Each structure stands twice: as structure tokens, then as C-alpha cells.
Length: 220
Ligand SMILES: [Fe+2]
Ligand SMILES: [Fe+2]
Image (cartoon, rainbow, N blue to C red; front, side, top):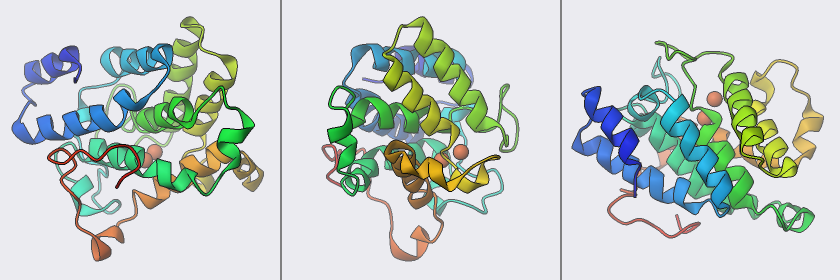
């Protein structure tokens, strides 16, 4: 069930429409509701409700429309990008079997899903502007860390999510080094962002209507 507070804010801002409701419902089902840890989920919801701009739920993925496939560049397109990553990450993570083995206390759902949900939540900066803020990774990573510390989230989870958000754009991030990709969480995060923002997807696929037939996790 989507956040009534976010719905209210979107209504007040005159953004609410049927298309957005579909995109937001799909997002909530495939992302927020798949987080296992209640305390981690609460922090993510808190950030979405209290820190993120309504425009995160409204805007297209690419302010220039040059990047991302076409269906991510319409109303609620950024939300679709994040939703598609949350669905696809399960399959991408299968190529990194050490992820689950290395720390069974911190399942993928509690590290990669929060990272994906928040990685572009401040994409156009704080306050939200008209184009991508080159420091959006940094803004989101620090907001997560601050809120996670206040909620006393497990240090391993808190730190891994912080790192995944910070390095999600890989080599496009200042001071990036290839050795960071030895951290499997960062490697999956970056790969997932690259795959689900590639505008070459236009040449190959049309999107499934993820809200009419909500696939169970990992089934896309
Ligand atoms: Fe980004
Ligand atoms: Fe992204």
C-alpha cells in the first residue's frame, strides 16, 4: 500500500494522475515492500516521505531526454527506472553468489533495494532543480547515513548502503577506482544502474506493464 502522505503531497502539488498512481503502486510493491528489515524499511519510507521532493515521483529520468529508454522519460519515468532496477537486481545478483554467503545477516533485500530506491532520490539536487545535480550521489548517501544512524541501523547494512549509493555511477563519480568494484554490493548496484538506464533498451524491448501484472520478485 503506497504512502498516504506521499499521495497527499502529490495531490496538493497538483501532480496526481492515473498514470502516476500506476507507476507509484508498482514502485511501492517492487521496491519498498520487498525490504525485509522493518527498521531499514522505516528509514527508507521516512526519507521518501520527509526528505525527497515530490518531483522525484513525477519527473522523467533524464532532464535532457538523451539518456535512459523512452518509457523512463515520461511522467514518473525516474520512478520507473528505479522500479525496473528493483525487479532486475535479483537476477543480476545471481552472478555474484558470494553476496549471500558473505553475510547471511544482511540479505540482498536490505542492502541493494534501499540503495536502489534512494540512489537517484535527490537526482536534481536539494532543493530539486531542473537538471541532474552532479553531486546527487553524495547528497543521497549522506541523508541515508544520517537517518540510518538516528534509527540505529546495523553498521554493516548502513555502511554498505552508503557505499552503494555513493558509487552507483561508477567511473562517472569523482575519485572512482576500479578496486571499488571488488565490493560485490557496489558491483551489482553499478551494473544494475547501467543496465536499466541504457537507452539501447529501446532497440530491443518494450516495457511490460508492471502494475497490471505485478511479477513476484525476480520474475521479470
Ligand atoms: Fe544517479
Ligand atoms: Fe539511476
